[in-house]
Image (cartoon, rainbow, N blue to C red; front, side, top):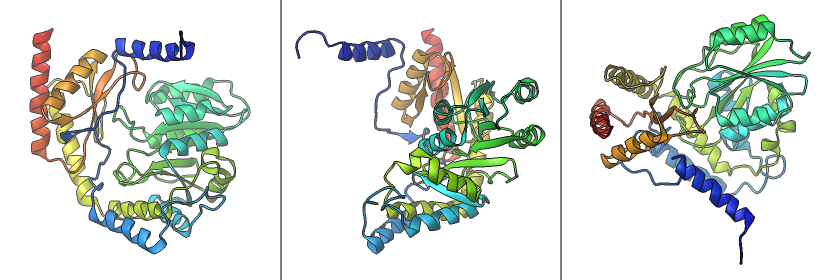
Length: 377
């Protein structure tokens, strides 16, 4: 191709701008002690999961579903799995989607109508934000975890005549703090609103949310503590029937193969019996947060296995990540637009394969990295 190509120039300009702002992302193969994984219960290499996959392949033989679930891709394994998962979280029914992103997009873009208003936490995951953007509903973004602001907004706003919805994460993916679900349910009861909770980072780690009449739906990803793939929307059977008929990310996508259902089922079975692992994860998290606070690191309001080390600038965050990688620790450098400008961070997420000695070794390396950074300044 001769001469300038405006389209390719546009791509080049964008990538150069990202590079200049220390926001360019690339793909790397993680190496070293893993402190950025969502494998919270350490089940990703469990032999029972491997055996379940092999057994399902031997029994069914299909490595492809052959179509969407409304065409040729449905299978009794999926229907059995959905019934089992509904019991696991105490819901009437559940519907499986190929990813958490697809579940949130499908739920929010279909359930919200033009006359509705949705109140969304400012720190919600991109999949929730995009699902809301794809809907015709009126949007109110409230400051992160600000219940008082939300209360005033529900009380004072002249809202359309439609339904009101509040959407949050149970554990926020970049901050590790928690939504006050009981307070939110009380607001929903008071103002006739519906609550939707994304439990991506609490499924299998915490007890399921208490079901009430005002809890419309919960969303549960399986690629984290359940060591598998896909996601469920859990709620009433009427909600699931509605999504089967209206959620485009369910209708217009090829189903995953049946052996994947056996994989997810095995992850659920192991998570159900993982009290010892949950206890260890909690103790690791408390130890990590306590020591980091004592050492003067900014971890925000983290109250979970996700511990952000907020460093501020993109450049500093990348230097910390590189230094820690050289010391043998795999950590994730999170920069805008994943987090607000000026709050770049290392997102530390713990898993039960780690020991207290591992945590202390990491913190020693972190202190050394900070000392080097102070000398640099």
